[in-house]
Image 1 (cartoon, rainbow, N blue to C red):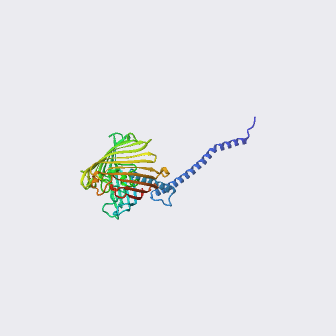
Image 2 (cartoon, rainbow, N blue to C red):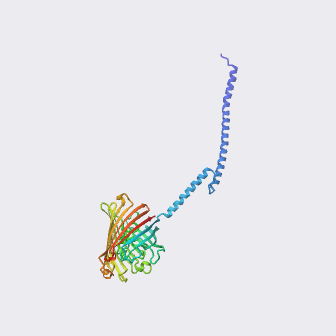
Image 3 (cartoon, helix red, strand yellow):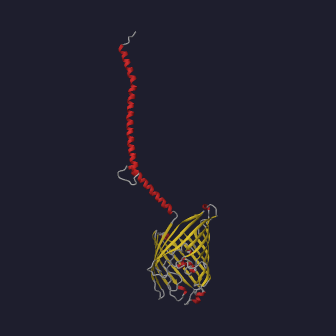
Length: 466
Protein backbone atom coordinates (compact mmCIF):
# COMPACT_ATOMS: atom_id res chain seq x y z
CA UNK A 1 0.00 0.00 0.00
CA UNK A 2 1.42 3.32 -1.08
CA UNK A 3 2.12 5.85 1.69
CA UNK A 4 0.65 9.36 1.50
CA UNK A 5 3.41 11.92 1.98
CA UNK A 6 2.63 14.34 4.82
CA UNK A 7 3.71 17.36 2.78
CA UNK A 8 1.24 16.41 0.06
CA UNK A 9 -1.65 17.17 2.33
CA UNK A 10 -0.23 20.57 3.24
CA UNK A 11 0.29 21.35 -0.44
CA UNK A 12 -3.25 20.35 -1.23
CA UNK A 13 -4.66 22.48 1.53
CA UNK A 14 -2.59 25.47 0.37
CA UNK A 15 -3.72 25.16 -3.22
CA UNK A 16 -7.32 24.84 -2.10
CA UNK A 17 -7.05 28.01 -0.02
CA UNK A 18 -5.47 29.93 -2.89
CA UNK A 19 -8.22 28.83 -5.29
CA UNK A 20 -10.92 29.93 -2.89
CA UNK A 21 -9.32 33.36 -2.34
CA UNK A 22 -8.89 34.28 -6.04
CA UNK A 23 -12.53 35.44 -6.63
CA UNK A 24 -12.36 37.69 -3.59
CA UNK A 25 -9.15 39.30 -4.84
CA UNK A 26 -10.69 39.74 -8.34
CA UNK A 27 -13.85 41.26 -6.89
CA UNK A 28 -11.84 43.77 -4.89
CA UNK A 29 -9.88 44.72 -8.00
CA UNK A 30 -13.05 45.25 -10.16
CA UNK A 31 -14.67 47.37 -7.47
CA UNK A 32 -11.67 49.67 -7.43
CA UNK A 33 -11.89 50.12 -11.19
CA UNK A 34 -15.62 50.85 -11.00
CA UNK A 35 -15.15 53.38 -8.25
CA UNK A 36 -12.41 55.09 -10.22
CA UNK A 37 -14.59 55.33 -13.31
CA UNK A 38 -17.52 56.65 -11.29
CA UNK A 39 -15.26 59.33 -9.92
CA UNK A 40 -14.10 60.27 -13.42
CA UNK A 41 -17.70 60.35 -14.68
CA UNK A 42 -18.74 62.59 -11.79
CA UNK A 43 -15.90 64.95 -12.66
CA UNK A 44 -16.94 64.94 -16.33
CA UNK A 45 -20.54 65.71 -15.40
CA UNK A 46 -19.40 68.67 -13.31
CA UNK A 47 -17.33 69.90 -16.28
CA UNK A 48 -20.29 69.52 -18.68
CA UNK A 49 -22.61 71.32 -16.28
CA UNK A 50 -20.12 74.15 -16.05
CA UNK A 51 -19.82 74.33 -19.88
CA UNK A 52 -23.61 74.15 -20.27
CA UNK A 53 -24.07 77.02 -17.82
CA UNK A 54 -21.52 79.04 -19.76
CA UNK A 55 -23.24 78.16 -23.05
CA UNK A 56 -26.67 79.18 -21.73
CA UNK A 57 -25.26 82.45 -20.49
CA UNK A 58 -23.62 83.06 -23.86
CA UNK A 59 -26.76 82.23 -25.83
CA UNK A 60 -28.74 84.72 -23.77
CA UNK A 61 -26.43 87.49 -24.95
CA UNK A 62 -27.60 89.10 -28.26
CA UNK A 63 -24.15 89.57 -29.75
CA UNK A 64 -21.24 87.30 -30.58
CA UNK A 65 -18.08 87.91 -28.49
CA UNK A 66 -14.57 86.62 -29.00
CA UNK A 67 -14.52 84.91 -25.56
CA UNK A 68 -17.57 82.69 -25.88
CA UNK A 69 -17.59 79.00 -26.83
CA UNK A 70 -17.25 78.14 -30.50
CA UNK A 71 -20.52 76.20 -30.55
CA UNK A 72 -22.33 79.25 -29.17
CA UNK A 73 -20.90 81.46 -31.89
CA UNK A 74 -21.96 78.96 -34.54
CA UNK A 75 -25.48 78.67 -33.11
CA UNK A 76 -25.85 82.44 -33.06
CA UNK A 77 -24.58 82.68 -36.62
CA UNK A 78 -27.10 80.05 -37.75
CA UNK A 79 -29.90 81.83 -35.87
CA UNK A 80 -28.96 85.16 -37.43
CA UNK A 81 -28.88 83.61 -40.91
CA UNK A 82 -32.23 81.93 -40.32
CA UNK A 83 -33.77 85.24 -39.19
CA UNK A 84 -32.44 87.00 -42.27
CA UNK A 85 -34.10 84.35 -44.45
CA UNK A 86 -37.36 84.86 -42.57
CA UNK A 87 -37.14 88.60 -43.23
CA UNK A 88 -36.55 87.99 -46.93
CA UNK A 89 -39.50 85.60 -47.05
CA UNK A 90 -41.75 88.19 -45.39
CA UNK A 91 -40.64 90.85 -47.87
CA UNK A 92 -41.19 88.46 -50.79
CA UNK A 93 -44.66 87.62 -49.49
CA UNK A 94 -45.47 91.33 -49.10
CA UNK A 95 -44.29 92.06 -52.68
CA UNK A 96 -45.93 89.00 -54.24
CA UNK A 97 -48.01 90.05 -57.24
CA UNK A 98 -46.60 93.60 -57.41
CA UNK A 99 -45.15 94.54 -60.80
CA UNK A 100 -43.21 97.72 -61.52
CA UNK A 101 -41.80 98.77 -64.87
CA UNK A 102 -40.40 101.97 -66.27
CA UNK A 103 -38.93 103.57 -69.33
CA UNK A 104 -37.10 106.73 -70.35
CA UNK A 105 -37.38 108.01 -73.93
CA UNK A 106 -35.22 110.75 -75.40
CA UNK A 107 -35.69 112.13 -78.91
CA UNK A 108 -33.65 114.51 -81.04
CA UNK A 109 -35.24 115.64 -84.33
CA UNK A 110 -34.59 117.94 -87.24
CA UNK A 111 -37.11 118.80 -89.95
CA UNK A 112 -36.55 120.16 -93.44
CA UNK A 113 -39.06 121.52 -95.97
CA UNK A 114 -41.23 123.28 -93.38
CA UNK A 115 -43.00 126.57 -94.17
CA UNK A 116 -40.95 129.75 -93.68
CA UNK A 117 -42.93 130.81 -90.59
CA UNK A 118 -42.18 127.56 -88.77
CA UNK A 119 -40.05 128.34 -85.72
CA UNK A 120 -39.15 124.96 -84.28
CA UNK A 121 -37.40 122.72 -86.78
CA UNK A 122 -34.73 121.22 -84.50
CA UNK A 123 -35.93 119.95 -81.13
CA UNK A 124 -35.01 117.65 -78.26
CA UNK A 125 -37.49 116.18 -75.79
CA UNK A 126 -37.71 113.44 -73.21
CA UNK A 127 -40.43 111.40 -71.54
CA UNK A 128 -40.41 108.98 -68.63
CA UNK A 129 -43.08 106.42 -67.76
CA UNK A 130 -43.48 104.30 -64.64
CA UNK A 131 -46.29 101.77 -64.20
CA UNK A 132 -47.24 99.88 -61.06
CA UNK A 133 -49.77 97.06 -60.79
CA UNK A 134 -50.62 95.29 -57.56
CA UNK A 135 -53.26 92.89 -56.28
CA UNK A 136 -56.33 94.69 -54.97
CA UNK A 137 -58.19 91.91 -53.17
CA UNK A 138 -60.39 89.08 -54.35
CA UNK A 139 -64.17 88.83 -54.40
CA UNK A 140 -64.88 85.14 -54.22
CA UNK A 141 -63.11 83.62 -57.23
CA UNK A 142 -62.76 87.06 -58.88
CA UNK A 143 -59.35 88.76 -58.78
CA UNK A 144 -58.85 92.50 -58.29
CA UNK A 145 -55.99 94.55 -59.70
CA UNK A 146 -54.97 98.17 -59.17
CA UNK A 147 -52.97 99.89 -61.93
CA UNK A 148 -51.21 103.25 -61.79
CA UNK A 149 -49.22 105.04 -64.49
CA UNK A 150 -47.02 108.05 -63.84
CA UNK A 151 -45.57 110.15 -66.66
CA UNK A 152 -42.99 112.92 -66.66
CA UNK A 153 -41.62 114.85 -69.62
CA UNK A 154 -40.30 118.02 -71.12
CA UNK A 155 -40.31 119.45 -74.63
CA UNK A 156 -43.02 119.44 -77.29
CA UNK A 157 -40.70 118.44 -80.12
CA UNK A 158 -41.52 119.33 -83.70
CA UNK A 159 -44.94 117.62 -83.59
CA UNK A 160 -47.14 118.98 -86.42
CA UNK A 161 -45.22 121.56 -88.45
CA UNK A 162 -47.15 123.58 -90.99
CA UNK A 163 -50.58 122.21 -91.89
CA UNK A 164 -49.72 118.53 -91.41
CA UNK A 165 -52.37 116.30 -89.85
CA UNK A 166 -49.95 113.65 -88.61
CA UNK A 167 -47.36 114.31 -85.93
CA UNK A 168 -43.64 113.69 -86.43
CA UNK A 169 -43.19 113.01 -82.72
CA UNK A 170 -45.50 110.74 -80.76
CA UNK A 171 -43.16 110.71 -77.75
CA UNK A 172 -43.43 114.39 -76.78
CA UNK A 173 -45.06 115.25 -73.47
CA UNK A 174 -45.50 118.67 -71.91
CA UNK A 175 -48.32 120.51 -70.22
CA UNK A 176 -49.93 122.96 -72.68
CA UNK A 177 -49.17 126.60 -71.96
CA UNK A 178 -46.05 125.90 -69.89
CA UNK A 179 -42.46 126.77 -70.66
CA UNK A 180 -40.09 124.05 -71.78
CA UNK A 181 -38.07 124.78 -68.65
CA UNK A 182 -40.93 123.40 -66.57
CA UNK A 183 -40.86 119.62 -66.38
CA UNK A 184 -44.33 118.09 -66.28
CA UNK A 185 -45.25 115.18 -64.02
CA UNK A 186 -48.66 113.55 -64.12
CA UNK A 187 -50.68 110.69 -62.71
CA UNK A 188 -51.65 109.56 -66.17
CA UNK A 189 -53.72 106.50 -65.34
CA UNK A 190 -55.27 105.03 -62.21
CA UNK A 191 -57.81 102.26 -62.64
CA UNK A 192 -59.18 99.15 -60.98
CA UNK A 193 -59.72 95.86 -62.79
CA UNK A 194 -61.85 92.91 -61.69
CA UNK A 195 -61.43 89.59 -63.52
CA UNK A 196 -64.39 87.23 -63.11
CA UNK A 197 -63.94 83.56 -64.19
CA UNK A 198 -66.83 81.91 -66.01
CA UNK A 199 -69.11 80.10 -65.47
CA UNK A 200 -70.06 81.84 -62.21
CA UNK A 201 -69.71 79.47 -59.29
CA UNK A 202 -67.55 77.05 -61.26
CA UNK A 203 -63.97 75.97 -60.58
CA UNK A 204 -61.80 78.99 -61.45
CA UNK A 205 -58.81 76.72 -62.18
CA UNK A 206 -60.79 75.08 -64.98
CA UNK A 207 -62.25 78.30 -66.36
CA UNK A 208 -61.51 79.10 -70.01
CA UNK A 209 -63.66 82.21 -70.20
CA UNK A 210 -63.72 85.33 -68.07
CA UNK A 211 -65.13 88.83 -67.76
CA UNK A 212 -63.05 91.94 -67.17
CA UNK A 213 -64.25 95.21 -65.68
CA UNK A 214 -62.04 98.33 -65.63
CA UNK A 215 -62.99 101.62 -64.05
CA UNK A 216 -60.95 104.77 -63.44
CA UNK A 217 -58.73 107.12 -65.41
CA UNK A 218 -57.70 105.19 -68.53
CA UNK A 219 -55.84 105.38 -71.82
CA UNK A 220 -58.48 103.87 -74.16
CA UNK A 221 -55.78 102.72 -76.57
CA UNK A 222 -54.57 100.22 -73.95
CA UNK A 223 -57.72 98.19 -74.64
CA UNK A 224 -58.89 99.25 -78.11
CA UNK A 225 -57.23 99.49 -81.56
CA UNK A 226 -54.19 97.57 -80.24
CA UNK A 227 -51.46 96.32 -82.56
CA UNK A 228 -48.41 94.19 -81.81
CA UNK A 229 -45.90 96.25 -83.87
CA UNK A 230 -47.64 99.61 -84.39
CA UNK A 231 -48.75 100.52 -80.89
CA UNK A 232 -45.72 101.86 -79.00
CA UNK A 233 -43.94 105.06 -80.02
CA UNK A 234 -41.08 104.33 -77.61
CA UNK A 235 -39.98 101.20 -79.52
CA UNK A 236 -41.63 101.23 -82.93
CA UNK A 237 -43.03 103.90 -85.22
CA UNK A 238 -42.80 107.48 -83.99
CA UNK A 239 -45.33 109.18 -86.27
CA UNK A 240 -48.72 109.21 -84.55
CA UNK A 241 -50.43 108.27 -87.78
CA UNK A 242 -48.88 104.79 -87.35
CA UNK A 243 -49.23 104.43 -83.58
CA UNK A 244 -53.06 104.46 -83.55
CA UNK A 245 -55.91 104.83 -86.00
CA UNK A 246 -55.41 108.37 -87.41
CA UNK A 247 -59.13 109.16 -87.29
CA UNK A 248 -59.18 108.48 -83.55
CA UNK A 249 -55.78 109.91 -82.61
CA UNK A 250 -54.54 112.82 -84.73
CA UNK A 251 -58.08 113.23 -86.07
CA UNK A 252 -59.31 113.79 -82.51
CA UNK A 253 -62.31 111.47 -82.37
CA UNK A 254 -60.96 109.60 -79.32
CA UNK A 255 -62.02 112.61 -77.25
CA UNK A 256 -59.38 112.29 -74.51
CA UNK A 257 -57.70 115.14 -72.60
CA UNK A 258 -54.55 116.98 -73.73
CA UNK A 259 -52.37 114.13 -72.45
CA UNK A 260 -54.34 111.23 -73.95
CA UNK A 261 -56.28 110.02 -70.89
CA UNK A 262 -59.88 110.10 -69.72
CA UNK A 263 -62.18 108.74 -67.01
CA UNK A 264 -64.32 105.81 -68.01
CA UNK A 265 -65.31 102.20 -67.72
CA UNK A 266 -64.54 99.15 -69.86
CA UNK A 267 -66.23 95.75 -69.93
CA UNK A 268 -64.93 92.71 -71.81
CA UNK A 269 -65.68 89.02 -72.37
CA UNK A 270 -62.67 86.86 -73.32
CA UNK A 271 -62.86 83.23 -74.49
CA UNK A 272 -59.74 81.01 -74.31
CA UNK A 273 -61.60 77.73 -74.82
CA UNK A 274 -59.63 76.96 -78.01
CA UNK A 275 -56.31 78.33 -76.76
CA UNK A 276 -53.97 79.45 -78.31
CA UNK A 277 -56.88 80.78 -80.38
CA UNK A 278 -58.78 83.52 -78.59
CA UNK A 279 -62.00 85.48 -79.04
CA UNK A 280 -63.25 88.59 -77.27
CA UNK A 281 -65.83 91.36 -77.24
CA UNK A 282 -65.32 94.59 -75.31
CA UNK A 283 -67.07 97.92 -74.83
CA UNK A 284 -65.79 101.16 -73.36
CA UNK A 285 -67.55 104.35 -72.28
CA UNK A 286 -65.23 107.31 -71.64
CA UNK A 287 -65.40 111.01 -70.99
CA UNK A 288 -65.09 113.20 -74.10
CA UNK A 289 -64.38 116.89 -74.52
CA UNK A 290 -64.61 118.65 -71.16
CA UNK A 291 -65.68 115.36 -69.60
CA UNK A 292 -62.24 113.92 -70.33
CA UNK A 293 -60.65 116.60 -68.12
CA UNK A 294 -63.07 116.08 -65.22
CA UNK A 295 -64.63 119.46 -66.04
CA UNK A 296 -68.01 118.10 -67.05
CA UNK A 297 -70.16 115.01 -66.62
CA UNK A 298 -70.10 111.95 -68.86
CA UNK A 299 -73.40 112.93 -70.48
CA UNK A 300 -71.80 113.16 -73.96
CA UNK A 301 -69.32 110.28 -73.83
CA UNK A 302 -67.06 108.55 -76.28
CA UNK A 303 -68.23 104.96 -76.77
CA UNK A 304 -66.41 102.14 -78.56
CA UNK A 305 -67.29 98.48 -79.16
CA UNK A 306 -64.62 96.06 -80.36
CA UNK A 307 -64.59 92.42 -81.45
CA UNK A 308 -61.24 90.69 -81.68
CA UNK A 309 -59.66 87.33 -82.26
CA UNK A 310 -56.21 85.77 -82.12
CA UNK A 311 -55.61 83.23 -84.88
CA UNK A 312 -52.82 81.03 -86.19
CA UNK A 313 -52.23 81.26 -89.92
CA UNK A 314 -49.23 80.62 -92.19
CA UNK A 315 -48.47 77.23 -90.59
CA UNK A 316 -49.18 78.29 -87.04
CA UNK A 317 -47.94 81.90 -86.99
CA UNK A 318 -49.88 84.21 -84.68
CA UNK A 319 -52.08 87.06 -85.86
CA UNK A 320 -54.51 89.49 -84.22
CA UNK A 321 -57.63 90.86 -85.91
CA UNK A 322 -59.77 93.66 -84.46
CA UNK A 323 -62.91 95.34 -85.75
CA UNK A 324 -64.51 98.22 -83.87
CA UNK A 325 -67.19 100.91 -84.02
CA UNK A 326 -66.98 104.23 -82.17
CA UNK A 327 -69.31 107.10 -81.43
CA UNK A 328 -68.24 110.42 -79.89
CA UNK A 329 -71.13 112.59 -78.73
CA UNK A 330 -68.77 115.32 -77.53
CA UNK A 331 -66.83 115.90 -80.77
CA UNK A 332 -66.55 119.15 -82.73
CA UNK A 333 -67.18 119.98 -86.36
CA UNK A 334 -64.80 121.98 -88.56
CA UNK A 335 -66.11 125.25 -87.13
CA UNK A 336 -65.70 124.24 -83.50
CA UNK A 337 -69.34 123.44 -82.80
CA UNK A 338 -70.23 120.32 -80.83
CA UNK A 339 -71.58 117.44 -82.89
CA UNK A 340 -71.68 113.66 -82.83
CA UNK A 341 -69.01 111.71 -84.72
CA UNK A 342 -68.93 108.00 -85.49
CA UNK A 343 -66.85 105.59 -87.52
CA UNK A 344 -65.53 102.08 -87.98
CA UNK A 345 -61.97 100.81 -87.79
CA UNK A 346 -59.86 97.72 -88.38
CA UNK A 347 -56.51 96.84 -86.84
CA UNK A 348 -54.54 93.79 -88.00
CA UNK A 349 -51.11 92.38 -87.20
CA UNK A 350 -49.98 89.05 -88.64
CA UNK A 351 -46.68 87.18 -88.59
CA UNK A 352 -45.94 85.82 -92.05
CA UNK A 353 -42.50 84.38 -91.22
CA UNK A 354 -40.52 83.72 -88.07
CA UNK A 355 -39.10 87.25 -87.99
CA UNK A 356 -41.51 89.17 -90.23
CA UNK A 357 -44.76 90.77 -89.06
CA UNK A 358 -47.16 92.82 -91.16
CA UNK A 359 -49.66 95.36 -89.87
CA UNK A 360 -52.54 97.35 -91.33
CA UNK A 361 -55.14 99.79 -90.06
CA UNK A 362 -58.15 101.27 -91.74
CA UNK A 363 -60.58 103.90 -90.48
CA UNK A 364 -63.74 105.26 -92.08
CA UNK A 365 -65.79 108.18 -90.76
CA UNK A 366 -69.51 107.42 -90.94
CA UNK A 367 -70.83 110.59 -89.30
CA UNK A 368 -69.53 114.09 -88.65
CA UNK A 369 -67.58 116.81 -90.42
CA UNK A 370 -63.86 116.11 -90.10
CA UNK A 371 -60.63 117.08 -91.89
CA UNK A 372 -60.04 113.60 -93.30
CA UNK A 373 -62.64 110.84 -93.32
CA UNK A 374 -60.67 107.82 -94.52
CA UNK A 375 -57.28 106.62 -93.31
CA UNK A 376 -55.20 103.64 -94.37
CA UNK A 377 -51.84 102.73 -92.85
CA UNK A 378 -49.79 99.57 -93.27
CA UNK A 379 -46.24 98.38 -92.86
CA UNK A 380 -43.85 95.62 -91.85
CA UNK A 381 -41.40 94.78 -89.10
CA UNK A 382 -38.34 92.63 -89.83
CA UNK A 383 -36.50 91.03 -86.91
CA UNK A 384 -32.73 91.28 -86.69
CA UNK A 385 -32.27 87.51 -86.57
CA UNK A 386 -32.07 87.66 -90.36
CA UNK A 387 -28.66 89.34 -90.02
CA UNK A 388 -27.59 87.74 -86.70
CA UNK A 389 -28.79 90.65 -84.56
CA UNK A 390 -31.74 89.13 -82.70
CA UNK A 391 -32.51 92.23 -80.66
CA UNK A 392 -32.58 94.59 -83.66
CA UNK A 393 -35.46 95.37 -86.01
CA UNK A 394 -36.29 97.34 -89.14
CA UNK A 395 -39.72 98.94 -89.53
CA UNK A 396 -41.26 100.54 -92.58
CA UNK A 397 -44.77 102.04 -92.92
CA UNK A 398 -46.90 104.01 -95.37
CA UNK A 399 -50.12 105.94 -94.83
CA UNK A 400 -52.86 107.86 -96.64
CA UNK A 401 -55.12 110.34 -94.85
CA UNK A 402 -57.86 111.19 -97.37
CA UNK A 403 -59.46 114.64 -97.12
CA UNK A 404 -63.21 114.91 -96.59
CA UNK A 405 -65.37 116.85 -99.02
CA UNK A 406 -66.38 119.23 -96.21
CA UNK A 407 -62.77 120.09 -95.45
CA UNK A 408 -61.91 120.60 -99.10
CA UNK A 409 -64.60 123.28 -99.27
CA UNK A 410 -63.36 125.12 -96.16
CA UNK A 411 -59.59 124.67 -96.51
CA UNK A 412 -57.70 127.97 -97.03
CA UNK A 413 -55.48 126.40 -99.69
CA UNK A 414 -55.80 124.36 -102.87
CA UNK A 415 -56.36 120.81 -101.68
CA UNK A 416 -55.31 117.52 -103.16
CA UNK A 417 -56.67 114.09 -102.30
CA UNK A 418 -54.70 113.05 -99.25
CA UNK A 419 -51.78 113.63 -96.91
CA UNK A 420 -49.24 110.89 -97.54
CA UNK A 421 -46.96 109.69 -94.76
CA UNK A 422 -44.01 107.30 -94.68
CA UNK A 423 -41.55 106.19 -92.02
CA UNK A 424 -38.44 104.01 -91.80
CA UNK A 425 -36.58 103.15 -88.59
CA UNK A 426 -33.86 100.83 -87.38
CA UNK A 427 -33.89 99.72 -83.75
CA UNK A 428 -30.36 98.86 -82.59
CA UNK A 429 -30.07 96.87 -79.35
CA UNK A 430 -27.21 98.06 -77.16
CA UNK A 431 -28.11 95.71 -74.31
CA UNK A 432 -31.25 94.26 -72.73
CA UNK A 433 -32.23 97.69 -71.38
CA UNK A 434 -31.08 100.20 -74.00
CA UNK A 435 -32.11 100.66 -77.64
CA UNK A 436 -30.99 103.34 -80.10
CA UNK A 437 -33.27 104.00 -83.10
CA UNK A 438 -32.41 106.27 -86.02
CA UNK A 439 -35.55 107.25 -87.89
CA UNK A 440 -36.60 109.08 -91.06
CA UNK A 441 -40.13 110.31 -91.84
CA UNK A 442 -41.58 111.97 -94.90
CA UNK A 443 -44.89 113.80 -95.37
CA UNK A 444 -46.09 114.63 -98.87
CA UNK A 445 -48.89 117.18 -99.33
CA UNK A 446 -49.08 118.00 -95.59
CA UNK A 447 -52.66 118.77 -94.63
CA UNK A 448 -53.71 117.79 -98.14
CA UNK A 449 -52.22 121.03 -99.50
CA UNK A 450 -51.04 120.07 -102.94
CA UNK A 451 -48.95 123.24 -103.23
CA UNK A 452 -47.08 122.73 -99.96
CA UNK A 453 -43.56 121.37 -100.10
CA UNK A 454 -42.90 117.93 -98.70
CA UNK A 455 -41.38 117.71 -95.23
CA UNK A 456 -38.74 115.29 -93.99
CA UNK A 457 -37.83 114.62 -90.36
CA UNK A 458 -34.65 112.84 -89.31
CA UNK A 459 -34.42 111.76 -85.69
CA UNK A 460 -32.59 109.59 -83.19
CA UNK A 461 -34.44 108.00 -80.31
CA UNK A 462 -32.88 106.43 -77.20
CA UNK A 463 -35.06 104.11 -75.13
CA UNK A 464 -34.01 102.91 -71.68
CA UNK A 465 -36.16 100.28 -69.97
CA UNK A 466 -35.94 99.16 -66.37
